[in-house]
Image 1: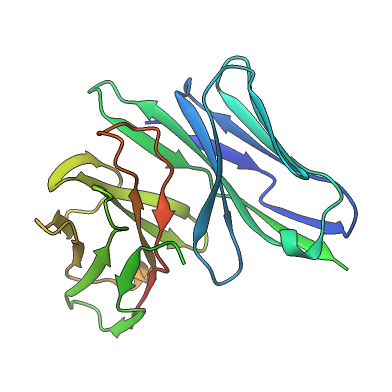
Image 2 (image 1 turned 135 degrees about the vertical axis):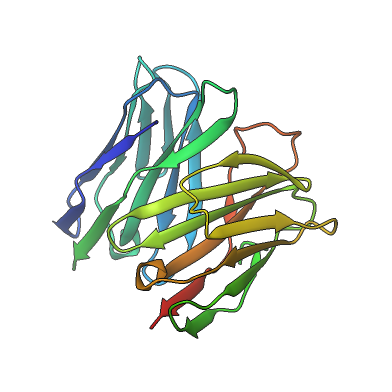
Length: 114
Length: 116
């Protein structure tokens, strides 16, 4: 079945440093979504990428979808303590039976040292 | 607040027991998804219902079942519980743009299940 690998599992950064998490799929994706889960909270949708090579920005966050639609990245510039949480990518793809499924990576837990 | 509600918030039970988790989607959302989150497994997709019909199944055990009712709320039934079933169970709903797959999901606060 479809697998979505996400690295690193943990990342500790000093406040003000940049942070990047990477997502790789075993199969070509139809789309990729990114979610953030604060400690003790629930996942919250951040963004969706659909087109090959697509790049989207949200303030200090930059999201990329690879040309082959098998990988994606989230980059945060100048991290702040409010960025703390676990970032999940979720790859969408159709199975051989034609049903669509969103598969989540295991997430990257970001800690920011003030 | 995502608009998705889940009850109960916490559930403590014993091995071998059966429990029911309840989810109410956001107003107007026809799709409901169930996920299991444990410490080392991330978010595992269990099942997806759209307007009362099962749409997709993930890694859902045979001891688990779900349904979506005419009022669109959903229940996840877990039976013959084992210690390893202890986890956070999330429900999510997505906007009604047909049965389109590319909809963002809005997660509820989760139900924390502890099996002793």
